[in-house]
Length: 123
Image 1 (cartoon, rainbow, N blue to C red):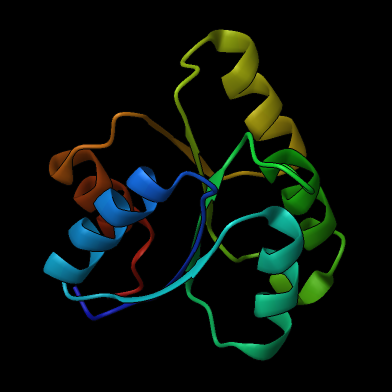
Image 2 (cartoon, rainbow, N blue to C red; image 1 turned 60 degrees about the vertical axis):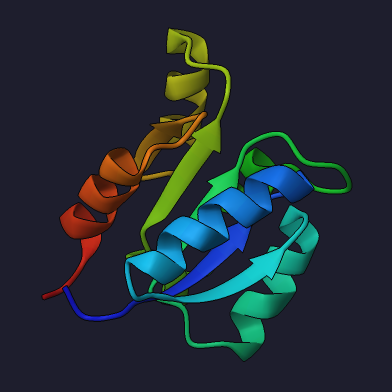
C-alpha cells in the first residue's frame, strides 16, 4: 500500500499518540488535529487521502464535522472512518447517516487500522 496522507481528528492525547504510532509504523503521513473545526480548516489547506475521525470531541464533534465535509462536492469520495469507544448499533447508524464510510472501535489495534486503510487505499 502506498503511503496515504491521513488527517486524524482526535482530542485525547493518549489516543493521538497511539494512532500516530500505528500510522507511522505503517508508513503513512499524518496530520493531527484535536477537533472537527480544525479538521475542516486543515482539509482546505492540505492534500488528504483519508480521515480518521473521532466521534466525540469538544468544539465540533466528528458527526457535525463529517456532515459539513459531505456538503462540499469536492469531498464526496473522501473516505472518512469513524473512531469511537461506543460500539453500539445506534452509534454505527449515526456514523453512516452523516456520511462516514466505516467504523473503528477503540481501543484500536494495528490489525484493524491496517485492514480499514487497505480497504480504502487506491493501490
